[in-house]
Image (cartoon, rainbow, N blue to C red; front, top):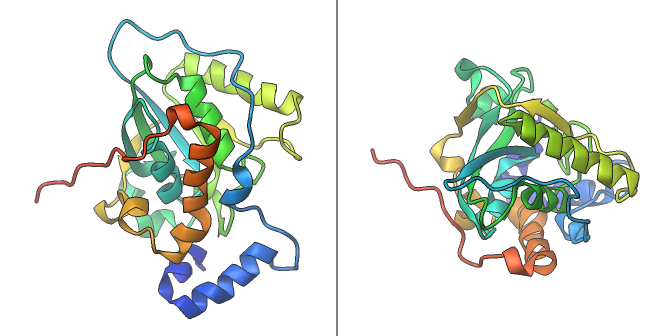
Amino acid sequence: MWNPKSLLRASAVSTAALLGIYLLGPFGGAVARGADLDRTLPAPLVDETPPGSGTETLTLAGGCFWGVQGVFQHVRGVVNAVSGYDGGAAGTAQYEVVSSGTTGHAESVRITYDPHVISYGRLLQIFFSTTDPTQLNQQYPDQGTQYRSEIFAANPEQVRIAKAYIAQLDQAKMFPKAIVTQVGQDTGFYPAEAYHQNFLTLHPDSPYIATFDLPKIAALQKVFPAHFRSDPVLVARRSS
C-alpha cells in the first residue's frame, strides 16, 4: 500500500515533490496543515469531576501518532503519552500490518494525566484544536482507516463528555464541515514499536515532522499558553 508517511521520510527530493502535491492538493485544491489549526475553540460545557486522587487515561486517534503524541507530551498535567494501536486485535498490532488499513486499528496515543492539573474536557479541547476532525479516514497526507479520528473511551462518563463536546462544536459551527470523529470503546491498547516513541522530539528535522507536526506544537503554545510545557514528558526507553 502506498504510504505517504514512509515516502516523506525517503529523501529530500521525494519530500519536496510530495509536499507540492499535498499542500496544494492532488487536483490543485488547498489541504489544511498544522499551522492552520491555531483556532480558539470553546471549552467544553460538560466536563468531568476530578476523583479524590490518582491519574486517569485517555486514548485518542487523530492521524499519524507522531504528531498526536508530540502535542500531548507538551501539555502540563500529562504524565505519559504512548504511541500505539487501538480498535483491533493484539495479534495484528504491528506497524506494517496496521498500515494495510485492514486490521481495524487506528494509530492512537494513550495519555495518562492528572485530572487535578488538567481535565478530560480540556484535553479534548486541545485535541480538536490541533487536528482536523472533519477529515474522514484521513489526516493531511495520510489516508486510510488507520488514520481516522476517534476517541476510545475508557468508561461511560468519557463517552458522555466526548459526545456532548462534539455536539457543542457542531452546533456552534466551529468547523466548516461536520465533525466525523468517532466515539468508540477502548477494547485494548497496544504500544507501538520503540522507534515510533518520542519520534517528534527525536527527529525534529524530519521533513514530515517539520511540515505537519511542529506547527501543531506552535499552535498549542499559542492557543493554550497556560497548559504548555516546553520540556516534553517522554516515554522511557525499554530496557533490553
